[in-house]
Amino acid sequence: MELRQLGNSDLLISPIGIGAWAIGGGGWAGSMGPQNDSDSIPAIHAALDRGLNWIDTAALYGLGHSEEMVARALAGRAPRPYVFTKCERVWDEKGRIGASLKASSIRRECEASLRRLKSDVIDLYQIHWPEPDEDIEEGWTELDRLKEEGKIRYIGVSNFSVSQMKRAQAIAPITSLQPPYSIVTREIEREILPYAHHNKIGVIVYSPMSAGLLTGAMTRERVANFSPEDWRRNLPNFQEPLLSRNLGLVEFLREIGQRHGRSPGEVAIAWTLGNPAVTGAIVGFRDVKQVEGIVGAISFRLSPGELDEIENRLRAQAAA
Image (tube, rainbow, N blue to C red; front, side, top):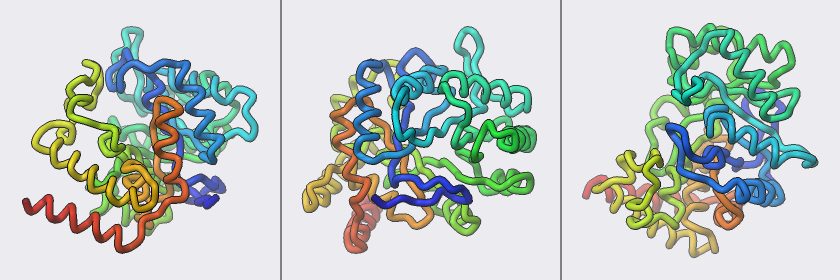
């Protein structure tokens, strides 16, 4: 299998990795709705058995529950995949979520994640959001200190702008950036991806299927029946008039995928991996069946002609 070096690290990662947001379950602000834990562990095992060698989670997902589920899934597992997690999002006893980049908070969060993950070291520790902006330097300095102490192997950022990455780099090198990127979410192409590519910062994109929109399984009925706590209900891409346009795009991706025996979701993932600045794509799933719909993206690549077809389709939609 093709493995890709992540930034300045010695981590060789599969082109797609396991996204553990959904397995955090419901009951917290930002959830994707309820999740059956008994589905999560077999799904993680199925993905690992098919060659994915990294998991991306965060303390925030399920307010610690996602990290706990990752630990349960990896108990006794050999070889152990790389585990990436995040800090900066904190919560109180009532589950109210806040942001902190204070050194003392970062250290507490790291220790808590290590306990939940049942691990002695975190392969990649990332600042989840650059908030509060004025504390970026303090938080990044503490991540570097934790790295020097051996609690973290590599440090990265998520959702950072170019100017924020420059501030962090003045203190310590950035191994990776985690931004949103998909066929319908392309803002990072203008400045962020070129900067990361030029500075040899690895890029692991999240939501390559736009939060499930491009999987081929999304319908108007399913959107209408989202759980009340599902954060996607309020996203413009899941609302009209964009919803109809996006579902039409999915059918176009389906046509391309049928030439290769691939799903629309696999085409969407392959599209993100076609950008030379992108190292890997984070793909979320809830059960073994969903894993089967995306694992082909490990090796599937679009031809230059097919990339042009998609680009022409997007231009035509924009002009309509």
